[in-house]
Length: 413
Image (cartoon, rainbow, N blue to C red):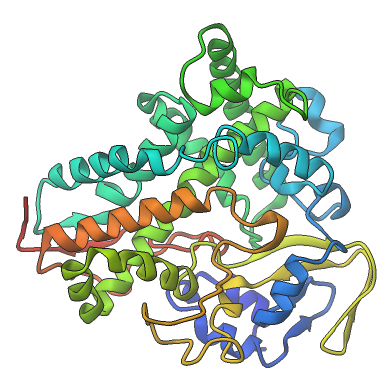
């Protein structure tokens, strides 16, 4: 029996190249099999649904099978579990918390927060390249694309960088629980992710309390002391927001930088251009977000009303998956979609989603990836892949290599 497209997407053996599966999936833009979710795979339909107020992100509307990796059900929150982050809420709750989180992060209240970090970010990138011990055998993930965004998000939030070994395992477990793995034991998986949320929550609670007593110039201090037009966050809201920013602030950027270097090494003409033209990093990163997005699909949405798409009625209360990476390769929207082309015009990709839940940290992730890839292109002499395809992470949602083994002839100053 041929596995369903849904199972093929989740099958680890297809992780290195899921794009032929997406191509087949687009032949049925709205797919529903058995009692599974409705899977939408074409660009215009995905974008429309991301802007449709009849689509809910609130875990409380998703039914017993749904699971929010940063939240437990309301009946379990009395044991100290984190409440839903604003990523998993609908308006007006979502809008209030996102506005409050944005005040110390971006325009109009903090317009220079991200761009003002440019010099600091470049220093981190340069230091990591300087620290490469053996140019003949580099694991880009371990040596560069993981420590870079972790260091950045720690500094931005005010989390001690030396605490990374403590929260690394919790973050990995919580991120893994995003993956709708049909073969996992739901009871054991739920227990493991619940414990990780509990541990992360207790760690952040201590940090928040310390910042309330001794505030610094960081986002946790700002959020803990803020009392603007929307009032102040409750302690539990602050905990869930800090957890979201800490995890999302590095998980996707690790993939973006690693996928980016892998793609450049597979397209040496573009890599040579980037070495000669550092400003090319801006369109390179935008095309990467289309071509190899770090978030492949958005599962666990639900319909608040019957919705008709391409002749298919998705009933109220149905579970919905939006395959962003498939939409980004839709030939109805992008010419030659399987070609990596940084000169591509009109590149309104879905790499950071769209609508009210578009990626909160997109400005920072863009800047991190631009600086990282430009510096790697400039300083690595004759870089080349040692293994292609590389081993991938298990996660089908946050898709990226677990390791990326490369070699070069030396490190330029």
